[in-house]
Image (cartoon, rainbow over all chains, first blue to last red; front, side):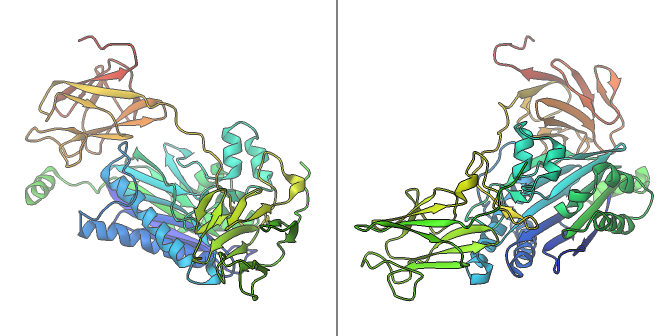
Length: 269
Length: 238
């Protein structure tokens, strides 16, 4: 499968600095969006530290397969998926430790949505209200459920989606990375195939932009950087209240290789 | 829904052997300790010089123990740092501090203390957990595999020859990945991998993805399997 990806982040129209961070690492098959929170520039510090720590842990695991897993092992997902959760717990430790280093970092934290793609299996780990969408066969579906107060109320059937969108409490997340000494990571795995697209995004996009409008852009024929830019523009046109970050990943068929090439590859491998 | 205006959070201070009093938490930081430079001074040898502090981050309050000798507890549990919630009882030695957040809006829901433009963390609400996990297995009817029966314990179960495949094909020309069986919520579905020419379920070609039901016959990469959904009472007749 041929994987291409593009990311874009924007401060928006209301804020004076960008607390989001993102990462595209094709070698690791790793894609991350983080939305930091905290006073001063602490939010930026938290999201940047988290992204770096997750990448570092996964890169180290490639070098040293016996690197211990941090936290419990989840038997319902693969080894790489457990490694991804471990990386997020490692990042939690880093951000939490750093939050103690300076008074103005006290209480800082970040959301995270991270995807690890190997062959045709996608592992997704998230904490907070940054999301991952799967676009397949002309439909868009959120694979993550926000760890937010409004999402919990919707799950319990206490409020509707529309009420949630207007709720003054929609900024409350029920989980975040770095705030406590340990973090509860939600982890899942799904099969993916060529033709699929993934979108990781911070709530700056989903707050103002309807999934159908996102689908419309991602179903177009433009290249990925243009799609990313258009998503940012839409978020800003919807108010741009918050920082917006998007990472778009496209899974496409390998360019046709002949049987001979494939056989050769097999024997060389 | 009318929202009540946020009122300042307060700390009900009950020092041992003294009456109680309220302190409004208006400052960004409230320090607690034995020394005179603290905001709240507790003259007790069991209290460290700089014992703990309450830090306000946006609209959320955190209690931090400043590596005190005798420690700080919340609701009886020793902590180093903790996000304060309404009615949390802070214990320092024999002294009690009760955190009170916006008493007027103290309903079953979290108090609306939120700065609307900012993301805030709230902890401690229970998430709805997944229901009991369905279990399923596949039985190998024909073809080369390393076992005859595989429980489908994962969310994504790979059928193939690759390392880490859940249903391990051992034939010479077996593809690294032939198909995947995925569990989503309470159902299982199968989809062919890239390059798989033919995936049959009960004799029909699968394009994209197909839901599996008990007894389905799967044929892929020269292997025949039967999908079995395990329920509590039903036994799978062979």
